[in-house]
Structure formats: structure tokens, C-alpha cells
Image 1: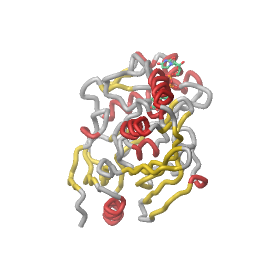
Image 2: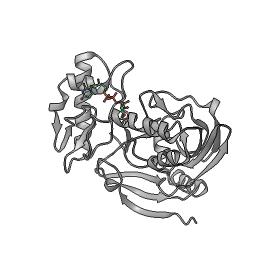
Image 3: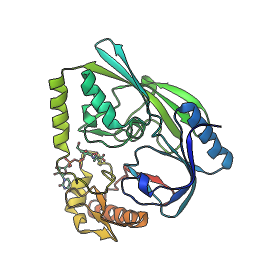
Length: 293
Ligand code: EPU
């Protein structure tokens, strides 16, 4: 049996940035892809659900008991840097923190990842949500990615097989674990990289700091801004229990203390309804859900 840490009946509230939600059947923290495969098989054998947990910064976890296993990628944190023409390749496992990748690129004088400035969580989570800023994302950087699907099959995907869309990874749904990927970066000067980091950091100025949030709740509709639409519809006045719409940015929901997942979900749906009634636009969720909503 694996050396990976394993907890039966684990609470998930402390493992997500909203700080709410219930518990799962078990939580496993494998160190690599082969250990992860053991737990993917376990979930399949038990016939229950399975969720993949990265940094917990973009998820809403259902209250009460979730009849599912959860694989945390936090211990899958190895990475290597290889010299390549005009720059380098970084091969990183899913659990490497995004912050660490950004720091590494600055340290090694590699440009292309500055859009990660201020993005929380893990590499795998950021890839799965195709995280980005100002039109920049992982898409042009990924050379290959390795996955294990929930039916147990392993695969390496080449760049040309991967179709990335705004905040949508090529695989979608909750059906696989991204174990590792390779990024191709160009050499750049420290000054250039630092200036780019400053530029991306400035884009986040209007976002709430220090509050318990999960980043933007909704994707931006094409050619529009979810935050602006929610704001114009008066959503900043809305709250449910201790869940309230951020006064800084209407696409963020804050847990001001003791909000349940049901409170947060009721508020997101209330906001969504307002935008639909006012503009006929159905906002799509950017956050991912653990359990039933
Ligand atoms: N706006 C308002 N009221 C608000 C919020 C925004 O009027 O309450 C207006 C702003 O004034 C601006 C426009 O809406 O004119 C766009 O707002 P902002 O510049 O804050 O960018 P955004 O589109 O809301 C996107 C990403 C963020 C990312 C920023 C900066 C999405 C859904 N959001 O926000 O990503 O940090 O750009 O690059 O794509 C995330 O994905 O979790 C996230 C926070």
C-alpha cells in the first residue's frame, strides 16, 4: 500500500479559501502519479465520487457529508528546469504552488509566466481552470501535460492535441487528474520580468485583500465584464447570512464569518438571477463545485 498520507472522514472547511463546507469519505495526499493512481482506483472500486483538490482557492464545498474521496495534490510538488534553445522548460507536478513557479521564473530569468502574479493555488488547479489575466494564460506555454483519468487510464497530451479556451481547460468536467506538465519559457532580463509582474499586480488593485473569497465567482461573458454587470445590477447590496458581495469588486463573494456553503450558493444564484433579469445574460460559473448544489 502507498506511503501517501490518508485520512478517513476528513473535514474540508480548513482546506478551501472560503473556509466552509463539510467532510468527505477520505482525503489522500499522494506524492506522485503512481501513488495517485492507487487512490483513483480506490474511488472507482468503492463506486463513490472523486474530487481533486489543489490549493482550494477556486472551489465551493457542499455542507454536510460528501460521499466521495478527495485527492489532494499538495504533496506532488516536484519540478525540474531544463535548458532549451532561447530559454528553458519547466516540468512541474500538479501540486507545485503557483507562487513558487513565478518566483522560479524570476530567479532563472525566464519570461512568459508573469500573468501568474497574484494567482493563488497550485499549478494543477491553475491549469485545470486555465487561470490567466488580461488575455494571457498557460495555453501558449504548455508543451505537454500528463493525466490520469478516473477510469484509470494514463495519457500524455501533446500541445497540438490541447484546445484551451478562456478559463476552460482542454478536458473540462471532473473526470481526471492532471499530474504533471511541461512549460516552455523564453529567456528575459530581470528588469523586464519585474516590470511585467508590476503590470499584472496593478490589474488586481480593485480586488478584495484579506477577505475569505474564491476569486472571481463567474467567468466574464464574451466582450463583457461579469464584475461590472453585477455591480450595475446592485449586487453589492446583497448578502445571505454571512456571505456578502464584496464592496471592492462585485464578482467576489466574501465569507465575513461563519457563512455556510448553502449561504454562498444562494447568494451566487441571487446575483446570477439579477444579471439575467436585467440583461438576459446567463453568467457561467468560474468556480468549481465539490458535492451537490
Ligand atoms: N467593474 C465594476 N464594478 C465591479 C468590478 C469591476 O464596474 O464591482 C468594472 C471595472 O471597473 C472594469 C471592468 O469591470 O472596468 C473589469 O474589471 P476588472 O478590471 O476588475 O477585471 P475583471 O474582468 O473583473 C479579470 C479576471 C480576474 C483577474 C483580473 C485582472 C475573470 C472572470 N476575472 O477580472 O481573475 O484577476 O481580470 O487581470 O476573468 C479570477 O479569475 O478569479 C480572477 C480574479
